Structures are given as structure tokens and as C-alpha cells.
Amino acid sequence: METYDLEPENLLAKTVQAATVVIYRRNSAGGAAQLLMVERNASLAFAGGATVFPGGKVDPADRELAAKLGGDPDLGAARVAAVRETLEETGLVIGIEGTVDGAIAAEARRMLLAQGDLAPVLDAFGWTLLPDRLVPFARWWPRHRTERIFDTRFFLADLGTGAVDIEVDATENRHLFWASASEALDLAEKGKIRIIFPTQRNLERLALFDTFEAARTHAEVFPIDAISPFVEIRDGKRWLMIPDGFGYPVLGEPIEAADRG
Image (cartoon, rainbow, N blue to C red; front, side):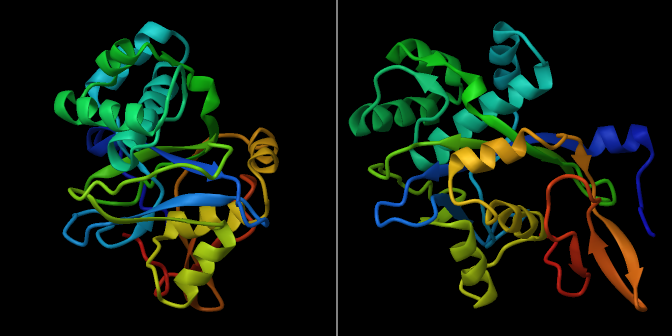
């Protein structure tokens, strides 16, 4: 087994904290719940052109706001970043308590894009941040890369109704769409979208469940320890793998087929 782990001091120096969120809505036509997918602009250095879940890096202002809430500072900052990035990228408001409609969300997004800080937006609209509404699902921290490394926490969030408006952020993304996890995997299989290795594994795991509630119950059973892919030799071929025991039904694929971003 090849691990390529960096020395601890180099790993921490290269690591960027990040957050992403799997946003559920009920399927108005029936069937499995739908997830919000984001197609990134091809010009981006990381995962350019790939379809991912909304999210981004944790900013210092996210940490400041999380510190006021108490609790685990890293988990809290990631939750704040997930709420902020979702509003910035898609115009959706998650993880808050307060009055929200399409017009309010649009105005809040304009304010956030202008200021870059979630705290004054919360104050301006009388919203209360409810970070526990973002359910921890996974944590991916690849330790074999030589360039910038992302320590990304994945969350689940539920919108409930399908009556929601989304709007693409043209600076980083070029297309937003709703699909069940199985539908997204089918689109990737047909070559209609491109998904990277972590997204593939997470969609396979999410496809086990038709509802947010079932996925949440499943997520609460498994540990949220850092997952770092590794290379394993199988029948003379190199496979990119993840450890067992984290709830994933598929643990890897031949490395030549894996899109690593």
C-alpha cells in the first residue's frame, strides 16, 4: 500500500480548511430527494469543469463568527463557511432561523457579496445562525498531494420543499442543477458531467438513501474522521482507495480511471 503522507509540519502548512454541503430538497414529482449540484468554471485551478457540491474555503471571518457560538472551533468555522458559501454561490439560505423569501435571500446575497462577511448579513436581516442544522457527514483530507491540500468537512442540509430559487455565481460556477444522487451518477457515467474521486464516492454513499432523514440517520452512525485516499495494488493494478468503516459502499477504482481534480 502506497500512502505518500507528508511530514506533519508540511501537511499543516499546505492544508486549507474548507467546507461543502449536500443540500436536499423533496422531489415534487416523487421519488428520491434531489441534491443541489454545482458545475465549476473550467478556468479554476482545482476541479475546474467538475460538478461538485456547493462550498469553499474557511475564511478568517468564519472563524470569528464561530468563536462567538462556542463549541468545536474547527467544526463551527466549517459550518459557518458552508452557510456563507451556499448563499454566495447559489442564493439559498440554509442553517438560519428567521424570515426568508426569494427577495430577502437575493438582497442578503448582494450584501454578502459586497462585504464578504456573514455576520453583518445576519444582523441586518435579524437572522439567527443555527449551525446544528448542518449535519456532519464526512471529512476528506488527502495527505498525498504535493500542492495545496484541502481539509474539507461535508455536511447535509435539508430545504424541505422543492419551491426554491437558485442563481449561478458566474465567477466560480457556470451551471446549477438538482438531481438525485443516482441521477448524478448516471449523468457522470454517460459523460454528461464530470465528477472527481471524492464526489463519486460521496454520491455512491448518498444514493443508498431516498430521503434526507435516512441519510442523516446513516451519517450519525459513522465516525467523522479524516479520510485520506491511498494507492493499493490489486491484481497487479494500482487502485485509488479509501479506508473501510466510514459508510461508503464503494472504496475505490483503478487509478487510471480516477479523476483526482
